[in-house]
Image 1 (cartoon, rainbow, N blue to C red):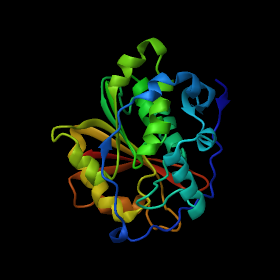
Image 2 (image 1 turned 180 degrees about the vertical axis):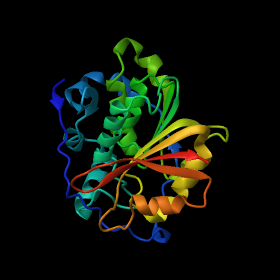
Image 3 (image 1 turned 45 degrees about the horizontal axis):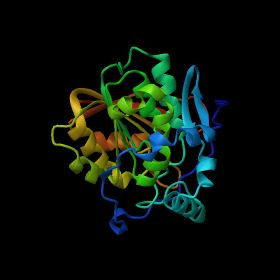
Image 4 (image 1 turned 60 degrees about the horizontal axis):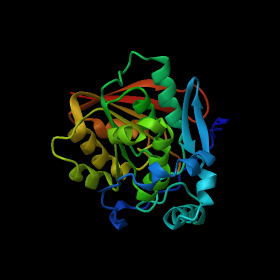
Length: 280
């Protein structure tokens, strides 16, 4: 497959999110891979490569998905275009876009391989979108990866196909069993999981733009992180037009049983950071 490099913009803004009290959030449900495993030839014809240094991860090209006949996906794309925003609270939460902090996280893990060991770990890619972070963990020999995104259409026509693309054909039926996929709101997702389900590593990119969702995100972190586990949050220091950002999220973590540490900051453009979170 041809190499493809993302041209990340430093001028992105996120439109202001409506008050959460006016929003009906989607309930969580498990999405089970089906036709995606069979339609490999079609997937390959629409695929490109995400590259970060020496890391290469195949993914379905979004522009070609947009031209597909999948009604649910087309509705999301049309809604995003109508609202002139990558985020429409409660309806579409940006899953078709590969956000730049995804690049930051993988670059950091590659630069500092001793920071975290993915081998044999249980990993959650929260707000996964294309699933790049989860696939990175999968390729690093995580024992199990759970992918969660708000919109089930993203999982069905983007995330699951992307995972399938990155598994050798002769191992596909077996290896896809190392993954699960869930849609819906974070609170609903937390409730849907078995009470004993915890993760060694939680990865999430650009999910702290809406301050009104901080409580449910922090609750999910605490409930689903193993006692010695680690959360890595890639995010902008400030999200213009919304008011969320890393300082606001750190403030929300105060007086909880979670402790945070900034382990990376960019030095140019719109400031971005990586926050590492553990249980106190």
